Image (cartoon, rainbow, N blue to C red; front, side, top):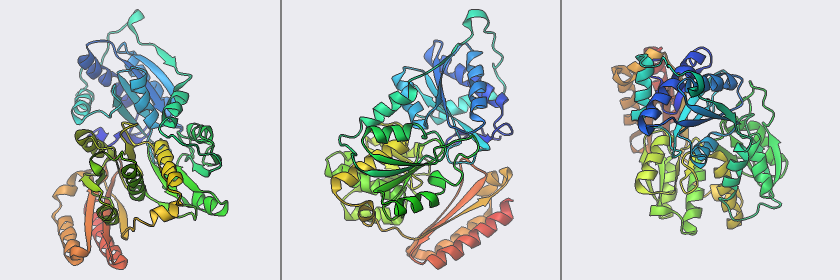
Length: 449
């Protein structure tokens, strides 16, 4: 890998790109950086999702930490936001999540959280990366009783569920909810959470076998959930991704309610209850133009960041805002969490539905979205590096922008987690944006293969 850390940790095909050796080195390098900051022997916790390689990588990075004299607490299968919450609750120095989020089972990843529950800043990631790539000081001399110990938590997901449950002050008694847990990290905690609050739960994607995570279920494939909700008279359907840090919903008719609509609905709910700090929601440049129109019509301010929930969170922390997120379903409620949390988002959205007395379809209809076309173009690793300097691609983008004028927009960017270039066009004329997106994608495919 030319650069280990993408926009959401280290990620790659497990046992090929993300190897046990690399995980072990990550443990050792992270331990060194933590010890330099803390001036003491740190303690870390490790959570994971349900994919087949997670046990392997969790053991490998734990071995790296222990070889540096760092004690490790294994949490088992928990959502990513549980790690972010528990690292602070358990007074540890870092939290590790083994997951490739929405990717298919052959991928895996490693995310690192600081003691305060926030993801590592770029500076610390660069320090860790430098130690690994230059193979510096990664040969420990710890022996005997100074070697780190591994313990296993029996209460992690209970403690996390109790925390999330406390974020709402109403009962869901009698509400019929469908939960699609993507055969991933939420398959235990989400049913427990909603049943504690009195909801009548129907479960999909709750039988993980190590290789079915995100397969035909969860937020990456809503077809089964949409059919189920519409056919079974559910109030709402919630779809999580593999590590449950994002949420997409379907209304009572089985229609998609994406992250833009969820943020808009919840921001309006916060505004009406006097809890929308700064009267502002934070989103990325990928958010739909309809979201911004909704905010203008409802006297809600907004700020935009580059793509990535970490950048949304940075702005929220900087300005003290209470809600932000991405169209993909990463939604951050900063009063309760330091990262995107699909289950928390589901609770807060259902809370708005109940308090408003409206159906989700009625609430979602208030946020009219413009047509968008997204093309994911597979490129080589060298191609990803060359993207910014390729003149032919720049010309294709400028041509499309000129043709759209003020009736739409063009966003083309390199994925931070996969070997892809994402081409997104938005506008009033769906046929035109489809044509222009295909033209740009073709140029990228020819130039960056």
